[in-house]
Structures are given as structure tokens and as C-alpha cells.
Image 1: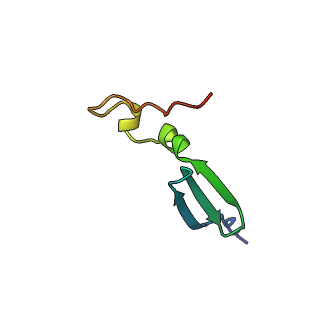
Image 2: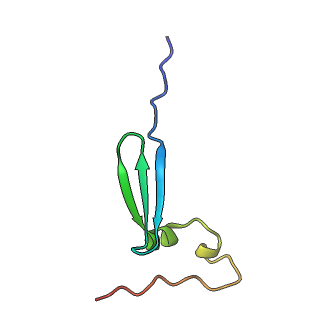
Length: 65
């Protein structure tokens, strides 16, 4: 008898909220997450964001104190 692979949650909705700069993700298991655009920029595997493009690295926006 072979084991069935565990099913993984699958995204059901992606919403880009430009007003508050968040990506909202909903999954078929009921989980919901909000990811700030800034975090997506910082964690991007893009070569340009890692310093391999013609332009200098993008700077994160200033945080309010």
C-alpha cells in the first residue's frame, strides 16, 4: 500500500491593495495572509533587487519614527 501525498493548501484569491500597499492571499483551507509590498521588494529573488542590474539597488522606503 502506498501513502498518498498530503494535499497542500492552494491559493484561491490574490488581492493587491495599492492603497495600503499589501498583497492579500486566501487559501482553500481557510488561511488568509497579508504581505506588505515592502517585504515583497526586500525578499524578491529578482537579479535587479540583488544588485545585478545596471541600476543601483533599490532603497527601502523610509519608515516613520
